[in-house]
Image (tube, rainbow, N blue to C red; front, side):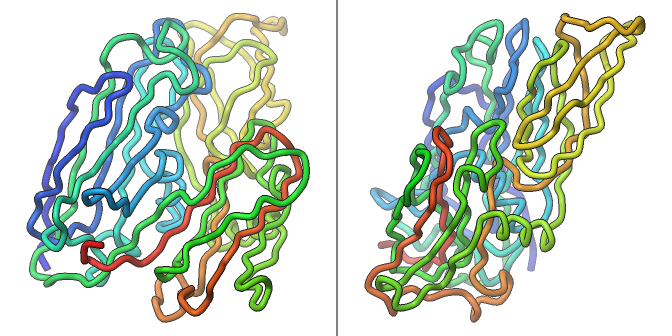
Length: 373
């Protein structure tokens, strides 16, 4: 096998709400499409606002058929659960600073998987569509992403030669998105067309653990004829930690005394911060670190609270990136253990809600054939 990289775009400037469409007129199997997005913070700050937020959709389409549909946060978390490693992420809140995130959209179980890869020649008009919204959290301004066209997009196709035409590829899609309420079950009907490899639940609200928003997850087939899963989310999260361990990123933050900081990791975050403000000698007291949130106190060298925003750099460790938890169907690397839903007429995921205002998303990774629908 010979591998090569095909650069489809390099640092092409995007507008704040652009939806670039990239033709995938490639002749060899594609193991992954690597998306890299950069942008610049406003002159004052950009607190709790990440590249992960402003890429609101990544789609692989062929005409009117959507095979992949994820936002950037889902894509980054999915990469962690497929590889056990965090993608390239440099979140920053510093005024005038840059942010750069790079994440592969894997079509196989791993990079250079010969058995599972996307084969564009078998499709009519395969395209990659990326949707940007720079103002999804705050409008472009001095305290958000900077005004003006300063989103830079790069896309690289990781291609394989001399492997023939793979019959199948792995495709992940958001099945459901909703806002949680304080109690009650949300029933989500799952497709029964293609084999399941992985389900991923995202339950995000700063200062809340995943399981504080969704306490239980059940997967039922034909109205409880077969109950595949009926578990506490807290247990599923603990099992994911034991299986995959923790991730690590570098995170630049801007905070004054007694402020909250949004974290990438939801569960068991560990923080190693240090002051990077020129000629400032502050003491940092980490009062609380949990639930995608850090609450810290800054004191100057005389022990007085410092109410001025200061630059800090920290190494952030933890698991459950972007407040997610995976459910693997069988052994992730052994296709004959994955779940085939076609024997059932109806499959539902039942999510038991425990707190209001959480952003809840359900993503399903399935096996798709390299043939057009």
